Amino acid sequence: MGTATAVAAAKDVVRLAPAKVNLYLHVVGWRADGYHFLDSLIVFAGVGDDLAVAPAPDLTLAVDGPFGPLVPAGPENLVLRAARALAQRMGVKAGARIRLTKRLPVAAGIGGGSADAAAALKALSALWRIEPDSGTMADLALALGADVPVCLAGRPAFVGGIGEDIAPPPPLPPAWMVLVNPGIAVATPQIFKARSGAFSTPGRFSSAPQDAAALFAQLARCRNDLTEPALTLAPVIADVLASLAAQPGCALSRMSGSGATCFGLFAEAGQAATAAAAIAAAHARWWVQPAPMLAGATEMGSPA
Image (cartoon, rainbow, N blue to C red; front, top):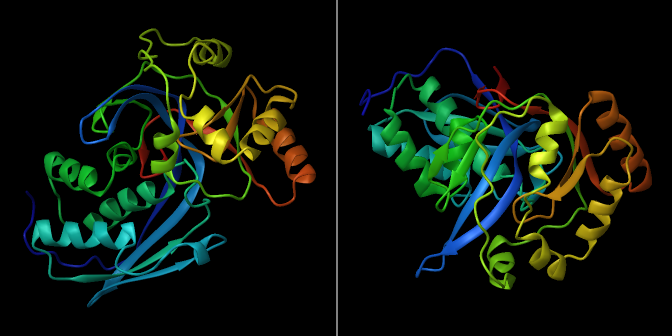
């Protein structure tokens, strides 16, 4: 399970918690307890929250950044829950001063809270100089939330079950994306409750796309099954998708997760930057970010 008692590291530890993007999301079934079985291809974008931890006698959390005021800093915060769970599981007596700089919108379908929790597990393991085995970390991650395990892995993945079934996809080519959130939060449980109709089949593929165009063509065969119910609760999502689709070079526009963040895919960095600037100019209140798609492994968000 790793070292039982930690000795705090001399230096602060910083991790980037990158945005999680569902390139597609199929709902393939459901369990009697209400959880849905999913099939999704998840990647990470080169934009995210920053999480820094430093030695301290107690566990504390401070939140700042553009979206900091929207994040509760109390015991219910997922970062603090991750810290307490890790310390209890590993028998750590040391504390930590945790600072979360929140740059990603909240309740936005891009796994911000899950990425923050995963970054906390990694950063605190380094700060406390403990080495939990992979099984321990996997258990801690899944107990915190369905998206935390894939955020902990920090690399592109096919995800199944309720989030615990993680498998590597074939190598993905370089690509760029523009992330857009219209400034609204949507509740994931409400989106799933509003979903109706038949279940989908998995959208996985086994052959490596030769280039971005081939990847985009493969993804065009898939969809996000939560888009329709999300539109009933947040019609502005349709405007976001249309704005992305209208940009030169946008090969595909789609909602991520349960929304309301959407993304457009581009083959070139310049196309993404131009598109992001145009959308931001037309919609000053929207959150708009161009970012590379991180196709390889990450150290909790730092490109490998």
